[in-house]
Length: 482
Image (tube, rainbow, N blue to C red):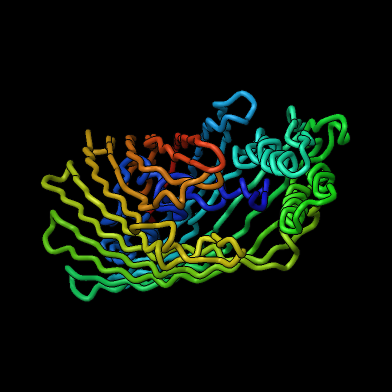
């Protein structure tokens, strides 16, 4: 029986992007994005994030942008593991991010522009897991089946069956976790127009990461045979079995080891812990405005190394030793975009994002608890492709719509109830309203459609798990030019 950790369900929040982007990177960073999905070649104020070299196309002056998004996400795992009570059983977690801000500012003077921005570059939500996950419950439910070989061996050697495997059920009074994650990005940059057609940008982002955990575990027991103590904590029962005279030394060691692992999650207790860390992201960009109707942009964000340190207040389960460090990087990213305006009222855009996941460290560990890179869980780096169209009516009102698709490149080793990544298609639509030459209001609605993923298992019994997800996002923002 592998080592259990109830509170690793926090990975469902902490290692996944809240909405759009790669495995851990949020690219939903403005209200204009929420109505188009395609901002890689924008020359608006949100170019501070999407296309910093494109800020050379702003009018001289000071520009601001403020956006808030509200995000709702539901994640479902259905397990057919036959020993779980009520199988097939569905486990559900709701993630909410009522406040998800993006703030940008830029000053443009002739060939030079200086910019600053703040956004939630990773994480950004909190989740409440009310019924645990199948990898926890299945191992509690499997205790009886795991003892059948011991019963059989004793019967063959001594002529009687001790009935250790006659566990009739299990009980979970309370098993709750609230986890939240916030990777805040503080960005500055400078843009220079080499010519009227070519501009370049350089900048950096400081990332401050914080993961918070609060959890309780209470009343986790199994219904063991009355002859061996009846209802009791699972670790206590395995130690009772291990004390049986005549068992081989390796069997005794295995039982006691599994008992210690079960103690971590079945002991009544609390968890209050925080992980903190930081890192820097160098950023460079190129913008090509070769003809009036066509703008092309390229941006590269470097790999961000982030090392988290545990700051633990209460940890009755021994899961987050105070002061222990772990990696939780953000990958490098390359973006390419094009914006075509065949007429003043019409804009057609296309974008491509490529995430350099494989060289990063996302906090995964091998069986010896040594952190590993992503080569064993990711076959190909993630990417997204998007396209959008926008049309302006009456000189002040614009309508837009966008579509995005992509592949996160993970393999079967990555997918689990602790963390999973699904292929998706995204649709979006919205409006913008120009109020004079100084103010623009943007509003957009985004819906992400995920492809279900089924993973099949053969050990200890044949069964499958189906992973599902749905996301809805609403954004509203105000752009100001002075």
